[in-house]
Length: 286
Image (cartoon, rainbow, N blue to C red):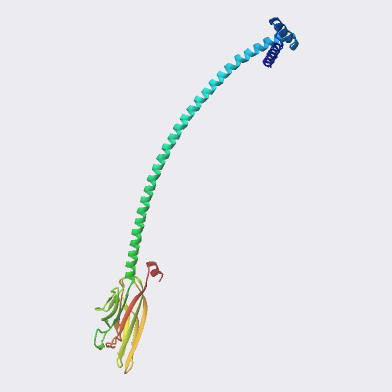
């Protein structure tokens, strides 16, 4: 505030001197007297004291201001240096992070390659398993394709029987033998797998002796087809569903003291086929 008063006083004096010179000029004494008079008019008797204080304050201000500027510059320089250090650290951190990112990208590509290779292997394994299963199912289905049918005589006509004991009939004229489970030489059907099987026998003969044929399973009598009359032709038929284990045998036996007759018309037949396979537990329930 005191410095401002001093500046204003100097400006007022300067303006006054200039004005006097324009009006006609003043000598040095007049100027000095005018300045002294103006000083006394503008300032009370304590003007000299104020001027001294203003000069002292201005010097103190200057003395104080310059060190403050240098201190501020030093602080600013130190701050800039610190910021540069921080920037260098940040740059190093960014560089390190970039290296980490590149390493992660490389690792990710390796993992992707590994995963793709593993997926391809799994896919190949699944494909192989699927193909193996398909082939196994095909084989299983082929194994399940079991059916046969056969007539008594391959050609001509004639009689079989009578005999004093039962005999196994061999049906030699094979119509169908899918799975080759029936043997036309022995007349025996051998089950290739566990399951439910349907069997049927037809009987034809001439009157007077009777005609009889029975279905056997593993030596045990199951069902019989029988007819008798004194004269003319006789015929009958019968069928049965049997649960067989793999290796069980089924065949037909001619009854004691009976006979059957056949011709190219194939009146006497023995047939059978697999209805469906059975698992072990299904057989146990039965």
